[in-house]
Length: 466
Length: 60
View 1 (cartoon, rainbow over the protein chains, first blue to last red):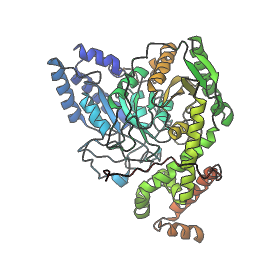
View 2 (spheres, rainbow over the protein chains, first blue to last red; view 1 turned 60 degrees about the vertical axis):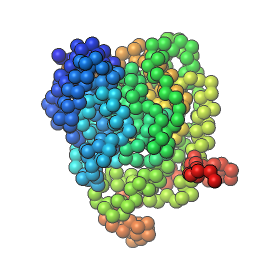
View 3 (cartoon, rainbow over the protein chains, first blue to last red; view 1 turned 180 degrees about the vertical axis):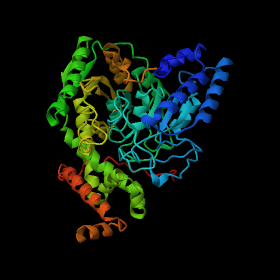
View 4 (cartoon, rainbow over the protein chains, first blue to last red; view 1 turned 45 degrees about the horizontal axis):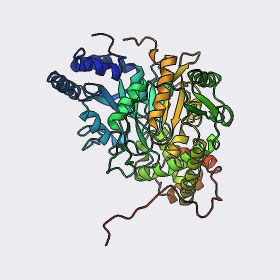
């Protein structure tokens, strides 16, 4: 069967359930594609072909016996290499953990396996989800499939690039200051940072405890909702896990946006910072399109973007330094330059700095909640620019601040990034949709309406057809 | 590399940093300083942090 590289989860699930697609042939096709093409994109740190083929055979046999577990049964997936899979290395893309093997699965890994997922391997990340892209680590950095000379975003770089390259239909990323949504923006795919506490972090190497999120990355909104359904839910062993009901995230996908109240946070990308004109036009175009579909649009105002960024960066630096302090003292030479520099930032902070930041955080959270009182979801930018060259140090440094993702790590609200067109350079543009806490379903509803109307997710990187 | 910076790093227990690492520490500290300038220092005394401690164990 041809045309498997860009098959989505929902479509593949239907075919598998109807026994028109063999999970084994599907896995073999993607493993073959990875072997053939990944040397160009460096998305995988390791592939696990034997594990994948065993799982695919088991799925096929089980479905043949009439037991279909659900939409993830027989679906290939891969994981960012800070997420544990029992018996396999979790390296964090770092020399520091090069010899580390995970004893057990992260909760998200076990849920994906229990749903019948077929695990293909571990993916490139920025070192410990903070420093990258780096050329001084044991593995090379992932490349952007839309143009391999360009940055794929990070830190879930292998996740975003692998989706765009057609290596798998679903993966997980982690997001502490935007690391799911940055590669989603730069690689033209779909990434959800769910509400803080919606998805367990157990078995995921921490970057900053109070800002860390795990979330699904896919090529479409529907696939994203299906994957979140598998991994969402309370985990008593994760102290931040929320004991909240998990709705059916697909229920509202086809309801359209008539009467939905959408707030536009324009000052983030037009005043606090000025987005690239093509990115700005893409967001305004999306707002107009949603208005044409019946959404009620109004502008809303939050504290300045830079306040959220500063608050988040101080908390991130302090918490990350606490995680890495002993290694930075004992083996600083074993980090890549970018991670080491970013992690050392926390060494200069005082206890008072950190505590003022976490006190400020509640004020910022409350200000956002007030701004959201009369709307259902908000729209704003994710990245303010299309991807820069992967070897342009100055532009790469700017990407850390030229974004509107950190506000939602600070407030804990769900935020979805979806494709919103292309720059003249051929690189993807994006849009961010933000919801109320635990309001992922409403975010998906608006995302699905825009996706269906705009059609950007049908585009493929040049030279990477099925 | 300035002796002051090396002393500062050593005081933090970072006594294995090379000159290159110290340059990185200097840049990182400068960048964090820019973020700290925005940090409010006049929050009301009753403003709580976003950290909650809960005691653990059974009721006696």
